[in-house]
Length: 320
Image 1 (tube, rainbow, N blue to C red):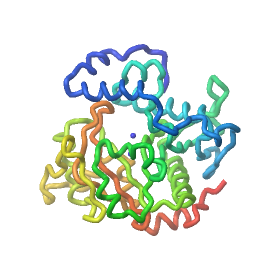
Image 2: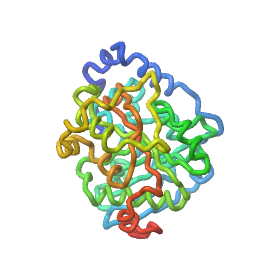
Image 3: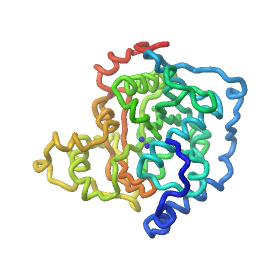
């Protein structure tokens, strides 16, 4: 739960990849670019053959819809590159720098939610500007293709076994351009996700959410706050893989300044908590993206009723 320019290699990028702690990340990133598509995956699947628009909602000039073509997905990947690599702390490998797109093997099996600004100037290729995106992966699609992205950081197998009768949806690669990081855009993005959840009758949303930085000691306050005040109950708990586990309980509960902790939490995580989400056991350091990740588990049944009322039980609040 993660701008274009003409610059070449980022100064120090190659040296950063040679650091011991990044060696495994670099190898995996390079391997992902060389791997063939997972079996039975075709980016040009039949529903992409004839362009069409799958609108999830509209608010003024902003529209939220699903990607319906390979070009749509590329534009989402370019936006992610701008936010994560060009303007963020992620370390790009050579293929990513050349393509100026953030992509991995999961993109081919996911649905991509796009926020389009119809009033913004067209791109150089005459396309409408994508200003926000989310990546969604349903359990029935993930299962035959190797599982969720979340599996790489957290052991969610027992969680899913305990709730074998429920349908899981993974949320990830969330990003919005800085000028659009407003309540209006975020609300429309969440309306789109809620429409999708209702349409596909999903029961549980999961995903990795990131705190900036890779030093857990500097993140002691927000991590400890999440541990003491947002930990998942046993039935919804999942733990970071032992090899990557970072303890979140770094401060005593009575030593935590809750207001200060909330100020340090990224808006996305605060938004999840307001909706009624739980946080898993342990964090994971993601050196490639320069973040510390926590597991978010959000049963649809636990979403605060005021938010369901806000968006509408039938997801009709911002219907196009």
